[in-house]
Image: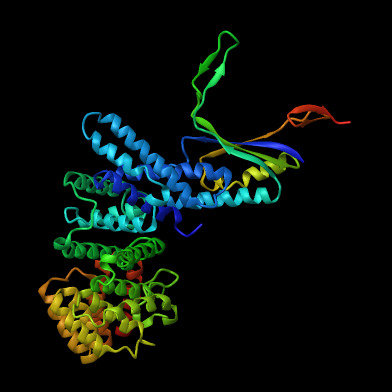
Length: 128
Length: 417
C-alpha cells in the first residue's frame, strides 16, 4: 500500500448557496464516504483547515510574511489515504460526493518514499 | 440523521436566538444560524457527523450569538449598552437551558405569531414563515411560488422592516388580542396549505412539502398549553390532515389531475385520515362551529366512504347549507352545486350555476365552467358542454387541468358527430 494526500481545493465557499436541506444532503453523503474509507482501512487521517493563515517567503533576514494567498483558490482540508497506486487514489478522489455539486478540486499527490527507508516514530530508520 | 434535521434545527435555533435579539433583528438571528450550519458541515466533512449533532450546533450557535452581542455592544458604545449587557448575561446560560425542548417550542410559537402580524401583507407573512419557521431557502420558496428569488427577497426585506419599525413584540398576544391574532395565524396556515394542495403550478414534491409544513405548524400550536383544547386549531388540523390524505391519489403519474370520482381510494393515506378524524372527534361536542369544522366534516364524509357512489351526499349538502351561513361566497356555492346535483339532479344544479354565472362573480374562474360542462355532459347536452369546456381551457394555465379539459372536449366533439 502507498500513501497519498488528497488536497481539497475550493474557490470561494461552495457551501454558501446551499439551502439547509441541501447542506444536510451534502454532509450526509460526505459522512458516508468517510465512513466507508475508514471501514476499508484506507483513511489514515483527515482535517479541515482554517481559511486563513500566512505565506512566508524570502530568505533569513528578509522574511516576507505575505498575504496568505494570492489566488482565490484555497486548500480547505486534506485526506491522508492509503491506496495501491495512483490510479486507485484517483478513483477514491473521484468518488468523493463533493463532485455531485461541483465547485471543488481535489489534488492527488503520492507521498514520496525513499527506497529502503520508512518513517518510524518521527525519525528515519533503515530497514534491514 | 433525521429527515429535514438541518431545516428544522435552522428554524428552532432562529426562534431561540430571536428571543434574545428581538423580532426586529430576526435577520441577524438568521445569519447567525446560517453561519452555524456552515461551520458545522465544514468540520463534519472531514470528521463525519458527530454522535450528538444537536449539541454541536447549539454550542456553535450560542458562541456566535455571544460574539454578535459583543460586536453590537462595541458598535453602540453609548446607546443600548445596558440592554445588550442584559442580553449577554441571559445568553450566558448552559446549552441545556437555552435549548430546552419546551423553550424551543414556546419560541417557535412566538415566531408564528410575529410572522403573522396583521401589519404584514398576507403573501409576505407566508414568505416569512417559510424562511424562518420552515427553514426553506429563498430559492426554494421562489420555486414553490414559481417566481424569482428577487421577488421573494423583496417580500422578506419589507416584512422584516415592518417588524422592526412597528416595534412588534416577540410574545404571544395577551388575552384581549389573542383570539383575533390566532384567526390571522390560522388563516395564513390554511392559505399556505392551499398553496400546496391546490397550487396550479410548481413541482408536486415541493407542493407536498408546503402541505406538510402547514400541518406541522398547526401541530406546534396545538401542542402548546395555551391552545391544546382550542376548537379552531383542532378543526383546521382535521381539515388539513383529511385533505392531505388524498394528495397522492389526486394526480396520476403524468401529473394529470384525477377527479375524486375516479380516484383510487386505496392510495388515500389511512394514517393521515385517522389523525384527522381524531382531531374532529375532540371537538364533536363543541358548540363553536367554524368554517374549518364544516369543511373538515365534509372532507371526513368523503374519506370514510368506501367508494364514490356510496358517498353520503345528503349529509354533505346539508353541511354546505350550513357553510353558506358563514360564507356565502361564490366558491362555496360552486362546491355546493356538486352536492345539489347528486341530491336534486343535474338540471337543478345547472340552474343554480347559471344564475351564479349571471352574477359575474366567477365568470373568469375555470372551475365554474368545468363544473357546468360536467353537468351538461350528464344531461347529454354536448353542445353546451363543449362551449363551457372551451371557456374553461382559456381560463386556466395549469397544464394538467388543460389536458383533462381537452380530453373531455374531444369526447363531446365525438358525441356531436
